[in-house]
Each structure stands twice: as structure tokens, then as C-alpha cells.
Length: 200
Image (cartoon, rainbow, N blue to C red):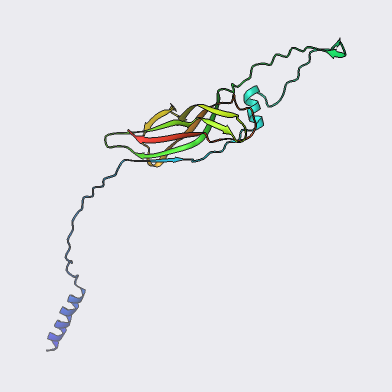
């Protein structure tokens, strides 16, 4: 009887240390399909205020931000005093006031996913309101030409590969200004350009 009890204990101990049987398992795979639309995101400023300093304007027009003195000799006697005709002949301006290029750096950015079958995005700039009027006089500035530039292309319309959503395509706006009728200092308001981005 004692031997049987010992044997039973040995068998029970073996059962306790024996590894358990594997659990039941089921496995399956799911195929995922996602449909994305084409999309264009245009980043831009709704208003830009630009101050052209006296120094910057002087340098553009004359190549230097100052005045040039002229020495034309002595005066001659004249009735009631003296006279001297120095015959000043102003030199040509370095910059053309009727065609002054204003570049607005990093003025726009585009993110896009292109059309199915397409690869490119197009950006168009239009000169929607080409006149900036002085706030209190009849003086004005006219925008005669507009363009966009992304470092690779320049024009009123540029085309580039769709950049995706992470790293946008960025660039400048270029405005050609006619300052001929800008005869008063002060603020000139309400010119406008429009940017249109689309997938092609």
C-alpha cells in the first residue's frame, strides 16, 4: 500500500511539471484599399503692406542714396546783380521709375495631390486691380505686370510636379510698378493680385 502511494505521488508530480497543451488559434489577413481625392492647398497672405524707404528709393533711382554737387565756376555781372548759367544736364536715372520691379519673397506656398493620371500642379497669377491710389490726392501707382517665381520657373503661369502634402512648393511674387504718377509721398492703397492653384 505504501508503494502504491509513493507511485501515485510521483505520477501527480510529473503531471504538475508537464507542459500544457497549445491554446486554440485563428489567423486571417485583411487587405486595405484607400481612395484619396486630388487636392490643392494654397497658402498666401490676404494683405501685404510694403514700406519703400527713402534710401532704397534713392539707390534705385540714382545708384546712390544722396545728391551730387556740381561746380561750374564763377558768376558774371548782370543788371541788378550777378548771373551764371551752369547748364545743368541731369544724368539719366539708374532705375526706370516707369518699370520698377518689386519682389515679394516667399509670398505663397502650394501643397497638392495630383489628379489620377496627372502629375503636375499649375499656379496662375492675375493682376486683378492694377491701380494703387493715394489716400488723399490724385496720385497713383500702376502695376503693369505680375509674375510668380518658384526658383525654377517665372511667369504669369508656372507648372511644377505635385509636391504632396508634407513639403510645399514655395515662391515669390513679382510686381512691375509704374511710379510715373506717384507725385506725392504717403500711402497708396488697394492694388490686388489673385493666385489660382490647380491640378492639371
